[in-house]
Length: 140
Image (cartoon, rainbow, N blue to C red; front, side, top):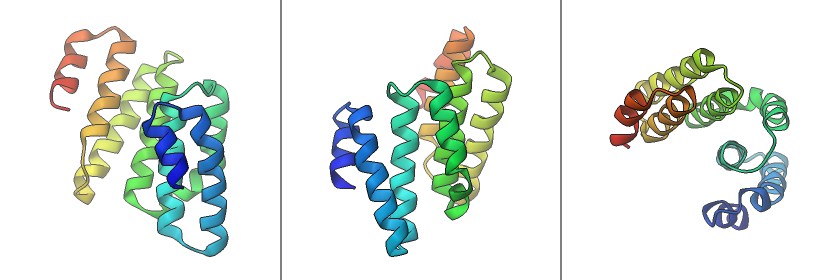
């Protein structure tokens, strides 16, 4: 998983995905749910910001969507990835709803909401509402 994380943080999201997929399989096979969840979180992030085509990313999110119930942090990553991806398709109301659900989930579980605000800001930029985007992004 470390190589996938390093590639992700090194702005190589596409290169990170195969490493993260392999790490996810290993974690699942070993029964380490926390490590599996963390790896899937990184996969969500890599698909959200990387060059994976939107339809493929959404399909892949659906494939491991049931894993989102592992923990609140993973569920939040799943919601945020879907929000940003569907916003690129012009589905702004649905994207706002997902980002809002992610923020509420973070608040309910005491998680950091900065990623939720970041995605909400990106959704608003895509929707053409710079004022709302600025409010969201200024607090990140």
